Image (cartoon, rainbow, N blue to C red; front, side, top):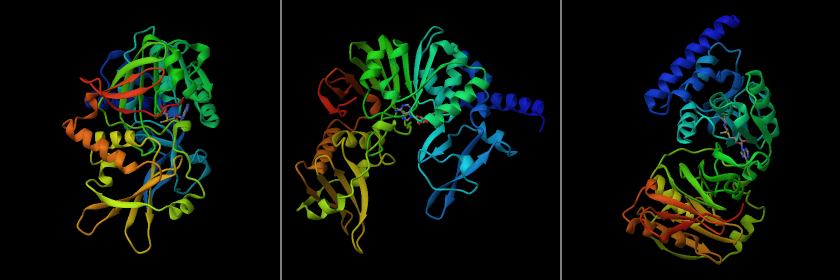
Length: 401
Ligand SMILES: C[S@@+](CC[C@H](N)C(=O)[O-])C[C@H]1O[C@@H](n2cnc3c(N)ncnc32)[C@H](O)[C@@H]1O
């Protein structure tokens, strides 16, 4: 295919993408429409992985831009993974490989919906966390001009690729390699902060670097992998913000320092040495499952913010879900019963499952409200989730940076 043919096909694909995004309700305003029409996504996706079924789960098959079909794939409203396990890029393998996605070009529908939710005017100064491939940074730069856009990427290799792609496409935002949880003080204050990676709590730096009246748009997650979807907060003063859960079911990969820590080598020793107490429980691990109920799973995670879950196979018995808080050396193991009920074995200074049970009971007593009926209040000393019409805390996000 000649360069001219590729260009014409790219323009055609962008028009089709715009139609798809408008039809889905993600793309709503003319300035963002013009931006999507203008930015060539292929410039940011010279290669990517496509998921394929493997014998033991998903494998990632490399796709390089030279392949005939790649332009059509690139303009699908899909997330394309560009890095696995913080190191593997599509160029490094010719065969499908296993791995955990650690960088990607997010599906355009979600990127554009977030940009619309950001509610910028032509003069907004924006801080983006998670440059990734640079595609969303290019959309921001196309809409606002590069001098109003700062984007931070944690991974230096990912950042270098994005910088080259942005420069080649004619965009000149301020690009920073570093931990986006620290924001970028040098260019603060910002009118808007947008994160395309997910956080456990709102980082203090974002609050400090957003001007009062400005806003922060992010997804929130935790160590049980339950996402809160999008959250938009207005910064109201020093270290203070208030906002709400938008009720979407979006999720991003966790921001790196907010990701769950690896479990320690002596985990199985202290599990086997502890003397747990066993009792019946009215709920099972389904309360942690977002497929079963998005809100319930996020609130359950909020009840035990420092816990992780792993499945352990005990002899010939069924797989047992262990909820583990290593910092406090506490665990709860959920044992399935033949009659479909559950028993729980708990050990340690806190009854982890008891905390999940209490949160679940509170949520049921409130009439099982969905997440869009909750708000998030941030002060210098606490980040508290409450129902819209109540001052009673429902739960708190873990403290830290
Ligand atoms: C879903 S990708 C970003 C998608 C990107 N906006 C795009 O359009 O291609 C998430 C990115 O966030 C980055 N990331 C993770 N933690 C980060 C952090 N603490 N600060 C900055 N970037 C981070 C990852 O390395 C990854 O590249």
